[in-house]
Every structure is written in structure tokens, then in C-alpha cells.
Picture 1 (cartoon, rainbow, N blue to C red):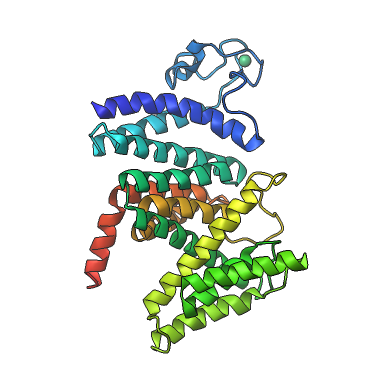
Picture 2 (picture 1 turned 135 degrees about the horizontal axis):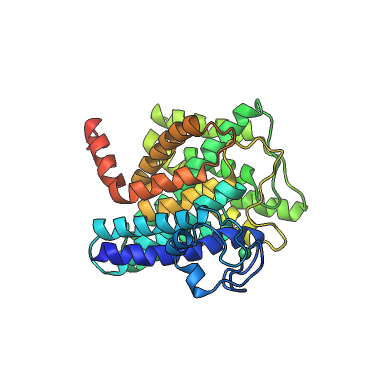
Length: 363
Ligand SMILES: [Zn+2]
């Protein structure tokens, strides 16, 4: 019953997501003006906007001018309908939880298709998804409790920021990235380095001091990425030899929390800064992973908690490898794979994590 309702609701929401996917990256309003045929400009009536069905009935053409209508529109509507239905089948209680799951699903679909079209993950969607995940955990303890949510957001963003940091270092053969003013990736890596040795509070403090120093001097102080990332690795090694108050796992956990907190705070600063284009990436930068992926990881971490997020990341890498081989496209965005992984992990992530830990004899 809830599955059937889910399909109808999903198809209608999917119709709205088409508008979001088309207009949001252009900075246009998603509610105004009403939809028009992009070919002839004729305003679309209610009959033209019945999800999936109108595309089939009018045989994929505009009713007014006969121009072909992309199969993308019914595809997004159908996909949203199917996933909403599946969610209603897996979670058959009509409560606030299913509403949160549907919202999570809709956000992931919009993010995925915008990433496929434009290679960006808009801050507005990433950060509203992050906020909604934190809100759900704070108010209803769903999908995870509050502590798992905020720690998951920080640690997941930190993990992706550091994978990106090491990958960039390798791609640039150790050369430094462009420092940001007043806050950039060097602050993320500095937080990781200090946190690995001294705990995540000190990592945050160090990053804050460097931001203040930048502001006082009016320029970005150089801080070599190889130095900070290397110091982070050394910290984890020192911890594993028992030379620090932290053990190795605590050292890694602290560096993830600190770097993710700085990455998300810095990302929010850049998102709120007026004049900066939504989610714009520097084309010349050999980024192995865009910073939009770091923010999407933060959102997923808030919804899933860290353990299931790692499952989501594993599913994403696996799906990316398979589809990358099948599609043979040179440049593939990572966002849709993270979204697939996140949706899978929402249902089965905690269970898979438990089984894997049990298999390793750790639980
Ligand atoms: Zn037309």
C-alpha cells in the first residue's frame, strides 16, 4: 500500500526534480516561471506534465510543435517513483521516517543528474541534505542517533578530503595546491596533522589559528601539503608504536573528525560567499576528486554514520569501476556512484559493516 502510494508520489516528485536538475545549475528559480517547451516556448498544461504517462501518450514529442522530448524526463520520474516505492516496501510504516527516507532519495537523485550534466554537486543541495540529516538525528534519532550523525558527517568528509589530498599530491608529484584565502585545503590538512598527534580539538584550534593569521596578514600563508599530510601519517605511525597518548585507531579517528570539520566549515564559508559560482571547480586543477564530493560525503555521513558510510564508499568505488568499464567514458563524475552507495548503505550498510567486522573477528 505504502509502496503504491510511494510510486505515485515519487513520480510527481520526480517531475519536480526534472525542473530542479534543469534550472538549479543555471541559478534559475525552481518554482517560477511555469514550465515551457524548450523548442517552441509553449506553456505546458497539466496534461503535458503527468509523470511518465504524458511522455508515452504523446510518443516522446511536444504536443504543440512536435519537437522530440528527451527520454531523460520520464526516466527521472520513473526512477524516483520506483525508488520511493521500494522505500515504502522496505519501510512499510507511514511515519516521519519514511518521509525522511523519501527526502534523502530525492536529494540524491537531483545531485546525481546535476553531476552527470555539469560535473558539479550544488552546495545548496549538499548542505540542505547535511542539515536535514542532522535534524532528523537530533529530533527523531533517525536514521542514526545524534552522535553518530555529526561524527559521521565530519569523519566521512575528512576521509574524502584526505583521499583527495593524497591523490592530488601524487598527481602533482608532490607540488603544492593553490592555497585558499582565508581558508583553503591547507587548513584541512593542517587540522589532520595536528589532530593525528594531539587529538581533534587541537587540530581545529590549529586550523583556526592559521585562518586568523591569514586574515591578520591579509594573504594566504604558504603551508606545504606534503608537510602537513606527511605529518598526519607520521602521527598515526607514532600512535601505532604507542609513543602517543592516542592509539592508532584513535589517532586516525581524530584526524578524520578534525579535517572533516574544517572541510565542511570551509565549504560552508565558500558556499555562503556572495559572487562565487555554485559549486564551481577549477578546471586546471588536477583534482582526482572534486570538493563537491567531500561535501556530499559529509551529507551521507550525517545520514548513515561513519561505518555504513565506508560501506557506501566501497559500493561507490565498485559501481564506478563496473560502470566506468561498461560506459567507457573518459570523464565520469563520482557523485552518482556515491549516491548509489549511500542509498544502498541506508538500508544494508550497518548490517554489512557488522558482518565484515565479525568476519575480521573485531566484533
Ligand atoms: Zn514545443
